[in-house]
Amino acid sequence: MSALVLDGKALAAKTEQELSARVDALKAGSSGQTPILATILVGDDPASATYVKMKGNACARIGMESVKVEMPSATTTEQLLAKIDELNNNPNVHGILLQHPVPEQIDERACFDAIALEKDVDGVTCLGFGRMSMGEDAYGCATPKGIMRLLEAYEIEMAGKHAVVVGRSPILGKPMAMMLLGANATVTICHSRTKDLAAHIQQADIVVGAVGRPEFIKAEWIKDGAVVVDAGYHPGGVGDIELAPLVDRVAAYTPVPGGVGPMTINTLIYQTVDSGEKAIAGH
Ligand SMILES: Nc1nc(=O)c2c([nH]1)NC[C@@H]1CN(c3ccc(C(=O)N[C@@H](CCC(=O)O)C(=O)O)cc3)C=[N+]21
Image (cartoon, rainbow, N blue to C red; front, side, top):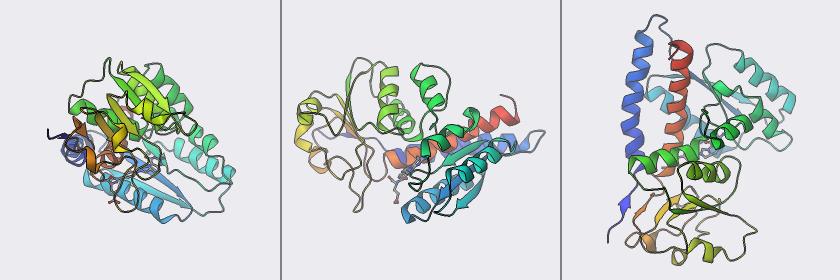
């Protein structure tokens, strides 16, 4: 059996064409305005700088603007809060991305939560998480929402399926579990204190690797015919799941790279276009 490849790169590219048309329509409207994403990078971590750059590039590809805010590694919580406040109050900014992680002296949660709900296009606020969890309108957290969009595009059945999410981080595992629950899956959340992880994963119809450790989840734990989603990305192009032995015995899988990563960025710009439409055209 040859598995279905959940091609995030292709879906992101296809969606960019639609987003590009929506941005053009806004530009052609009476205000002539374009949606603008503000990205905030604190410190000089090279990987974070690369990701933020990729986000800016994605904005440019669809004709949308981005403003890049860079702050030094010694930035305080107060300074970052002041910057977020300024962006919240800038009517030309429609979305705010605060790149995680921030340097350790900063209260990251307080800074995430300072982002205005309507500009939280990366879905990192407690308010947005709570609303999403309750089935109310809110932008979803970019990586798990990108995964949901990918599963939906490939018509992967979630209702009644047993989904096992490995990881419980605030911007990945925890919102992922709530989104799968919202799609009527039966959800198990596993984490570093879980006893007999293998036994849980063996039950899974859908497995989501969101632990951030290279090939931590072993192929032999995953049952034949499962749907495998790998949100990890580590040097050498490996994910959180040992993928190679699975490709001919699972139903579907996300490749690494080219699976979840491009959908994360795509969801960020997708939600920024939506926010821009609401602010500019009053949609
Ligand atoms: N507030 C916040 N929101 C985030 O969404 C967020 C964050 N902080 N901090 C870091 C993680 C990581 N992340 C990635 C985005 C795209 C790829 C991606 O596109 N990867 C490509 C490969 C990239 C390459 O060529 O190196 C792929 O998987 O195909 C990966 C990782 C977003 N994150």
